[in-house]
Image (cartoon, rainbow, N blue to C red; front, side, top):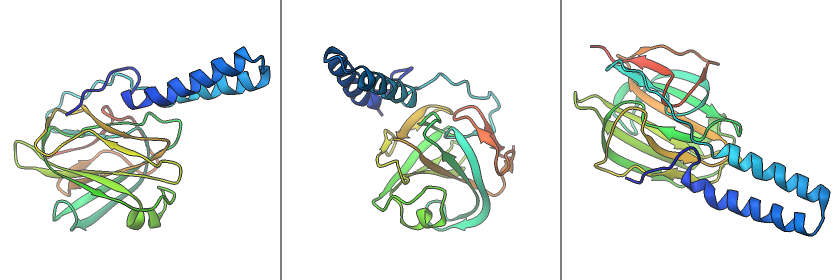
Amino acid sequence: MKKVKIPVALEGYPFIGLAALITIVVALLDYDMVSLISLAVTVFVLYFFRDPVRVAPTAADAVVSPADGKVIAIEEIFDDKFTNEHVYKISIFMNVFNVHVNRIPFPGKVLDIQYRPGRFYSANSDRATLENETCAVIMESDEGRKFAFVQMAGLIARRIVCWAEKGDIFKIGQRFGLIRFGSRVDVYLPNKVQIEVRNGQKVRGGETVLGYFPI
């Protein structure tokens, strides 16, 4: 399991460095307007890859959001892909202004990582669920609770980064990956979980409680 430095995600350094280099070059060539535009792009890229400290709730049964963004769907379904259980599927959409570092929603051990290549339709569409590139992390807690969360590429996002590996043991709120430039994360929780969020609610990765496991 790789470690990530804060407050900027390690994967952002090449993009930030390239944008800064271009800014310096055009500034030395006295292209004032281009320099201002390039500086604005550099600041945005730095802002996009920010990786703030988050404080997870202390309740042992709390499940936190794995991503910043907005809840766009809460469905009760039978999950035949990852957990083979009746679950709540919570979809969280991230726009380009959200923090894009993803976090572990509940402590446990990684049972499997499932990567699926695919297309890049808008992440808030039904077609994206069926055809977009995804990376699923399936985990199990010490109590035997099985759950999963899926990073999904989108129309602008073209790179899923997952640092988690099979066998890794995580604490709640730990960083496990990111998606570049806007996308979505789906969370699959057993249907016994008491859901605490609603459609349209804005959430913060590693802090906002999605629900509680029954004690």
